[in-house]
Length: 565
Ligand code: GLY
Image 1: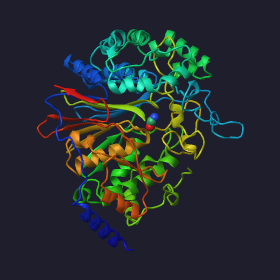
Image 2 (image 1 turned 60 degrees about the horizontal axis):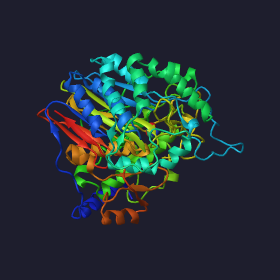
Image 3 (image 1 turned 90 degrees about the vertical axis):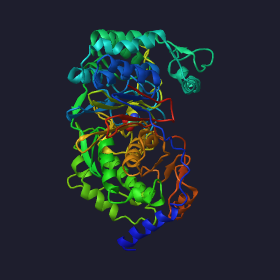
Image 4 (image 1 turned 180 degrees about the vertical axis):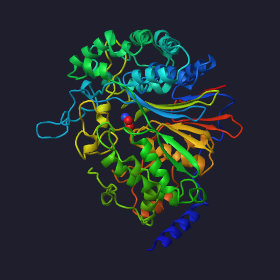
């Protein structure tokens, strides 16, 4: 079939399903604030951010306070023992990006998770002491505050110390999780952990963390030295010795967060500002938007057959590129310019036969000359001056390595699993990789985190991001499309059901109600495998309305809360 015929087919297919719209339970109401807004995964963390803004703090001050508060009230992903990425836009339009990603310890090496026969040892990169990368969150917050902060450092950490010391009532979802993970916490913390108790946790139980309060107080008093040196460093190294971990004093002392140039691109007149490698999020998001910009998604309709097809075929190709080219830019040259070339991305998708599913094994990464080669959390803050922060931070898996640093009260990440532990062997998110993302001493592992800021007509328009491992990039992609192509408000844009394709495995993961039975049938007839699954992502969004008010969207899939004034 000629290209013009494919195009005609997909328009016809889209029109044919418009009468049977998906029964979306879209939340039509979005909380709107006059001056400033904070959207996080936990109501208490959102409150901390708002309190700091009301004290005269700016978006960075609030972000630092929220990062530490989340380490207390949202221990499955909020952290001081993990890492993350921040995208920043000042009210004057200056943009910047901070990489506080964990890195491999000096003793890390390509074969560290393989047995003598070269096979991957199950779970070794996912749970326990050896799965932990050198944490970056504390240095990241120190750097962000040093460059842009206004309020005193200690003031920003006090709310987290108080929440840890006095305790806070856990939510229903948290009680269920604490109980569900009990066995695993026992296994990796045989001498006990703050989250372990003899009886079951219930909604409303008070969770107090005195050791964590002491650790955050050391960081409040001594800055980065309160974590990377002295008592906290002693406790981390001692913990490593207990479980064959390899993080050393040197690793801790040498950790440095890095300011990076954000990756930018355009979509229907909007400027997309997002994270650079070692996150694949920015390049992938820009490439996805550039690929689909040639198609009238808005006219086709939300989650219509044609829209799903073009979005999925774009995702399939861009995840194949991710596996081959993306890694730590301090170790390999990542072809960001080539991967985010709008003509290349547009032509590549135009050449695809959209009448039937491409088979992923037939899709290879793009060829560029000279190259061989779920649980996270996100928060957004816009202050009353219009400074904006978009941060995604993680321990990787839910509750990371499951290892609490004894005496310091915090959980260590299991970020080493985000390396390609063996070429072609999938990680916990099913993502495969190769040489570009192989383990090397001091190298940062590849990420999918996609904290993003969008400008329209040179002004701040949207602040967005999500957790969700490999689904992060496609969730942010869909949220931007929901707002720009389907005119959904901030709340609808995050409540809407989502779908996801990541090249391998070759299937479209769909949330409940993400596509109608008719669209499903049409996709299956065209050769797509549909795989129903639970929640995809927990997106947070802030949209700046033409009247300057801040419209917020907090994902209803969790306890996520928007606050502001
Ligand atoms: N640990 C999830 C990510 O960085 O993509």
